[in-house]
Length: 158
Ligand SMILES: Cc1cc2nc3c(=O)[nH]c(=O)nc-3n(C[C@H](O)[C@H](O)[C@H](O)COP(=O)(O)O)c2cc1C
Image (cartoon, rainbow, N blue to C red; front, side, top):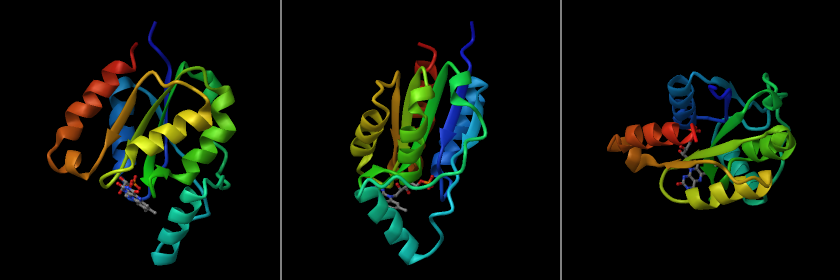
């Protein structure tokens, strides 16, 4: 039986969205973005993102357009902010992980901090993911991200 997969992500500048869309396309999955009004543009909002992430803040997010309990697997994607998972995905996991039966994680970063963000995601959801993926700028520049995303997509079948 084919797994029903939901890809849930947050993205400001498109890196995480790109991975989410790729995975959703590869798996025939439904994809939905987490939205929040909390963060705007500019320097102070960059600082606000970093501060909220460092302080492990739960920020208000809009209700998710899909019900995660209706899917066999939820693939959750987040940017790394200040070495932690981006706050809107912290909020999503805190609010919805009780409705999720199977989970996988991916994170995108400029360079380092992906291990910390993935650890956050395991801790907040209290779930063991069936697969994890971390992509940074170097992976994108060298196009290594393609093979990483393809491998991750195959791991979602297990
Ligand atoms: C507030 C803030 C903090 C960040 N902190 C880190 C970090 O600690 N380590 C890192 O490698 N990249 C960091 N980044 C870069 C993002 O993780 C990276 O650009 C990510 O791919 C952005 O995803 P998006 O395009 O989906 O928004 C940070 C970006 C922002 C906005």
